[in-house]
Length: 211
Picture 1: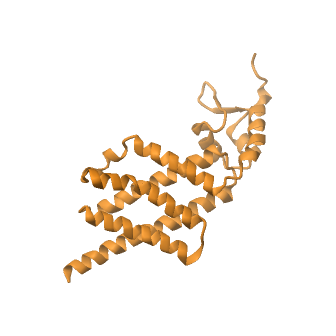
Picture 2: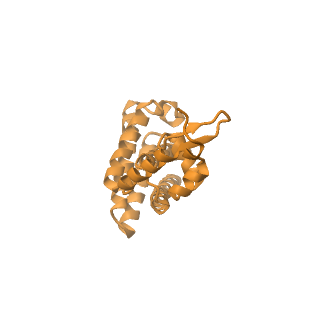
Picture 3: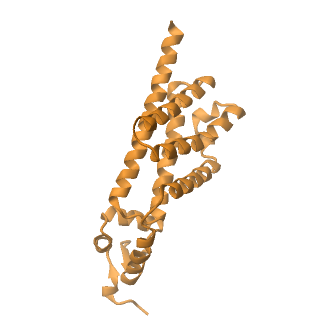
């Protein structure tokens, strides 16, 4: 039996009902977070009663505790690493088995340091980020990776972290734009400091080797 025409909502209708940007609704639909249907012309359409039900249930899941989020993010990172993505990286191909094992643990180290950062403030948090950058640089030099290679290694895990975090927030149906902005801003601040520390450490080692 066909649904009545007024039971269907467009992408913009749903965005207005949920109080989010249409691009957010599009992302949620494509990720399978929102129930969606396609017209013969390929347009997204949503059933009014399904969206209302989703809206009601999502209110209960809106608050995402950092500890739970980080746990789920770490699981996703492990899954991604298990998909043999590392083997496709040029810098990873230059490493022996021992070095590869240590770099596979880098994702966990990054998550643990980020967890410490999210639970603290000020200079201690920045020191944690910079300490991790020194660790990445020291490890890279130990295994004869260039600065470019070491940077690519860090960016590999940083990007996994961002992708996994976004997926966890989508799955948790977090529609609070401020929460999204805060989460992404804190990740950027932390990882920027880590990357800067990595580059500065490489520069310091390079200068020392010329003396």
